Image (cartoon, rainbow, N blue to C red; front, side, top):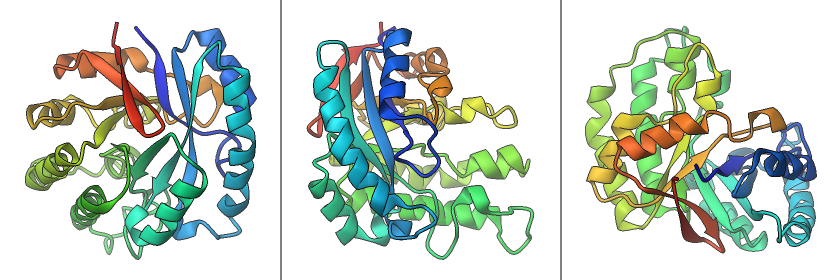
Amino acid sequence: MNIIDTHTHTNFSFDGENSPREMINCALESGLHALTFTDHIDVNDYYDSHYNQSRLMPLAAAEIPALIEIYADKIHIGFGAEIGQYIQNPALSKRLIAEFKLDYVIGSTHSIRGYKDFYYLDFKNKELEPEKIMQTYFEETLEMVENADIDVIGHLTYPLRYITGRNHIPVGMSKYTDIIQEIFKSAVRRNIGLEINTGGLRKPEYNKADPGLEYIKLFRELGGEIITIGSDAHRTTDLAAHFNAAAEIAESAGFKKIAYFIKRKPVFVGLM
C-alpha cells in the first residue's frame, strides 16, 4: 500500500519523544510515501507553562520547513498541526494557522468546555456521567466542523479510548447517530475530511481505530470524499503503525484513495 502518515508528533509537542529528523529517517527506512508533522496546538492551554506550546510551536516552524527542503527529493513532508479545542479560542486558532503557514490542519476535541483532556478524567467518578459527556463532545465537535478552518476531523471517537477502553464503561453509540450524521453532513458541505486514527489500535484495552468501519462507511454514504490515515505517533516506533488495518477499513467503506495535504489542498493517492 502507499503509506502516508498524516498525524505525527515530534518533540515539539509536549508529549512527543523524537526530533523531526529522527521521524523523517524512520519514515524513509519504512518506505513512507508522505509524512506530515502535526504537533499540538491546544488553544485552550496554548500559553500554559506546563505544556509549553507557545515556545515549542515557533521552534517547529523554524526547523521543519528547512527539513522539508532538505528531504524534498526523498519524501514529501508536510508541516501541519493538530488544533485542539478550536472553538474554545477561534481567534487564536485562526491567528496561529496563518502565522505558521500550515500545510494541513487537523481539528480535534481532546476536552470539552469546563473539563480536562479526557485522558485525565476519572470516568468511574459518578459525577461525570460518561454518556452526557459524549453528547457534549459530539455537540462541540459539530460546532467545530460548522465553523472552524480545518481540513480533517481528528480521531472522532477519541473519548471512547478512556471511557470504554481504560475504564471498561459501556457506551451505547446508537443514541449519537443523528448528531454524527450532522457532523458528517457539515463536513461534506465544507469539504472537510475524516481521519482514520490508528492510535487506539496500540492500546490493548481498547484495540480500535478512531473511528471504526461503521463511521467511515457512513461518512462515505453521506458524500464524504477525503479520508486520511494517521498513526498519532509520538515516537518513531509508532510511525505508520497498524496502517494495514486502517487501509482495510477505508477499502471496506468504499474508498479507493487516501489523501495528504499541500498548502491546505488535498492530494489523493491510491490505497494500493
